[in-house]
Length: 207
Image (cartoon, rainbow, N blue to C red; front, side, top):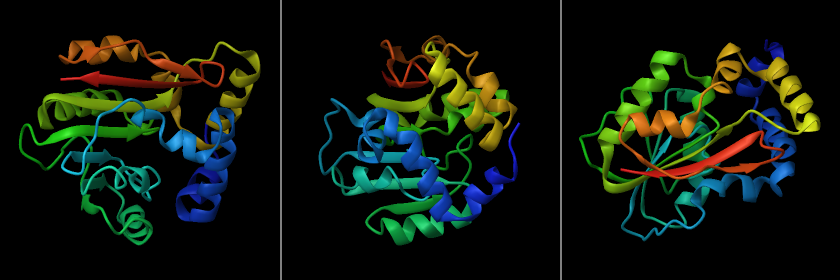
């Protein structure tokens, strides 16, 4: 799986943005897509928020409208450079999501969007542990990522997207029952909301 388009999408911001706009069309556009995980959350200007795997700041842009205490974390220096340019109101840290460089109980919200499917098995489990650790009691972990589609049209579209842009970890992620996995790590879990023929899931869980 994956072609040279995967490398290009990371290298060229305009290509990544174009792909994102096309993908977001199924949920009402980019603005709706980037705010899916923020629905019904109670956030204030004092809320401490971690945007995990923040990329170029696509969701960070919306998070800073709620809070003055937003930190974007990503392993890519190029992505963080773009994020700093795109959303200068946030603070940025270069680190891996499975080794979050913050003390226990720091954040009211940890957000991650379409990044968990990039992780190998061990990384995914380490991220669950780390997110639980850095959240305050009562804090929320908000996730948007792929889900096994039930609609044949979306199934074909997702297969093509995976072939062009993803690696085997994305296919493996579709086999995971994310609510059950989050429950294993101590989170209080509700049912995910499904979109785009069930090819996309949003779930908010609480420590």
